[in-house]
Image (cartoon, rainbow, N blue to C red; front, top):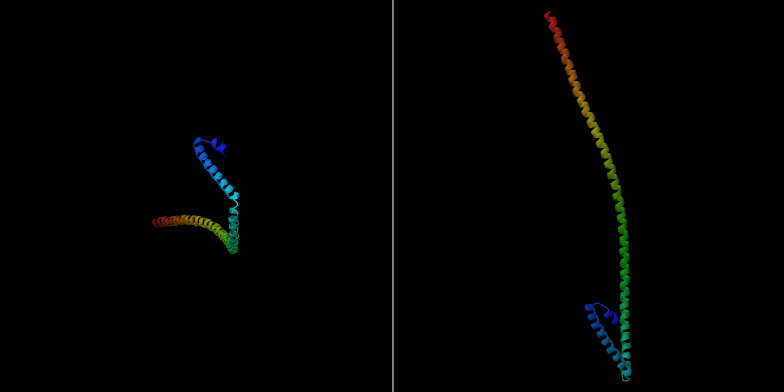
Length: 167
């Protein structure tokens, strides 16, 4: 690590070397403390005492951990039950959604069919309107023709009467 820190850029190098020195100092301090504790025989009695109290603490901690483990297991089971209920609700909702989509599809098909029928009716109405308008024009033309013919006949009768009465 020392070699790597020395090969880096100067601004990073200084901070890393300072940290590295601190770590080495801490490591040496801890090594000395471990040697001191392990070398003294007077500490064996203290060590045994600590281990015995550690066993009592371990049993107490073990019981506490068992209690927490049981509570955690119970919570896990409750969560699993809630997940199963949620999954069931989700499946029911999905089935309902599929049913609604099918109904909407059928309604769409009905609307499309009605739209096509409406266009057919609209086309027929347009054709009927054209036919009625052409019939109206023919009827008007026929009225003028008949009217003109009647006027011509009346004029012819009047001319005949005039020539017969004047002679």
